[in-house]
Image 1 (cartoon, rainbow, N blue to C red):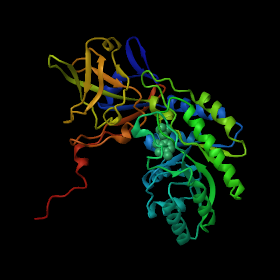
Image 2: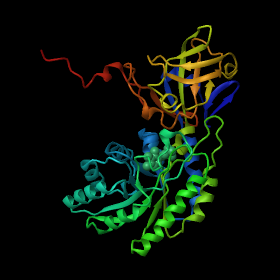
Image 3: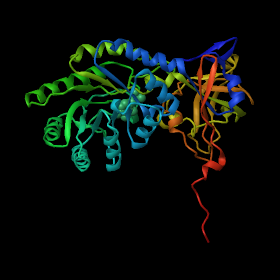
Image 4: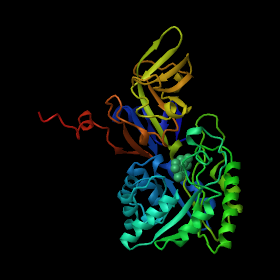
Length: 413
Ligand SMILES: *Cc1c(COP(=O)(O)O)cnc(C)c1O
């Protein structure tokens, strides 16, 4: 975790969180540059000397400064929309290192990505093969493709973030994949580059990854017999992180199990999202008031589910860090927000003695945090800052209330 206590106060690198909250206001997302760099190197170092491409899953955190930092470290990007492609380009990312995932790519998104010259389309259905072939034909281009295979393995994670089972909408069933590859190989404006899978998110065991890769390797054999040679294998993202008590393998441990299964002649593509940024981020809020209804104590913050949806959406348990360390003890409390929804909570049953005016941070907020935030209840979205040693950069201004209705109009009459 990027945050640490020093003299009972919470710090990110060489910046005190209380001073940052004072200067930039709350709610505030704080990212540590060093933590992102370290997380990236944890993947890149074990891959040295091997053909590889680490494509950061942009949906986990699409702030331009985060993307720019990763681009400078050499990362590619896994995108799921034309909007994300535009962000990657605006952040200085290399289109030749971009893979494009997602089940519902529009024709215009396909054209945008073809013109940009992305590395590969991760195709998720036979209908998409036809559509992409048509769009590439109109442009007089050839689209590089990988087929996303659904290997039917149980990722043993929350059902909303498991993607590799037969019942999920993602990918092409592994039994139907050879036909899809034959079709792709036969279409004149497609070029088969590889195979990919992404079996789920926040995985804390390596076995499901191993099972998936073994199935992909068998598929590769089958395809080779048909004369379809693959240049790369994309094993997706999904490696879990420690929020509270989880013990996922470290990137080096995970890679040590994966690499022997994949021949070095294949370029290894990976799409980590959470593992690169989750623990580089904090969300800081200030206590507005507390209340005890005789049954439960509530600590009501100025931030809630509109800023950080993971607890509400996935029943995610995220670490609570009182900015004053001594306040991490006290009566069991629910940490809730001001949004008018019963589901608006950030943590349940945590020991916390914070009172009005005190600051509380949620750890692990660098992934699927700001990107999922909304303006529900007409709440302007939080500011984002990135700490770099003793420096701090405002990387997204706090929204103003007026900006929330900038595109709206009163009736003309
Ligand atoms: C979300 C997603 C990822 C990243 O998942 P993490 O669990 O954040 O590593 C990678 N690839 C695809 C296709 C995704 O949808």
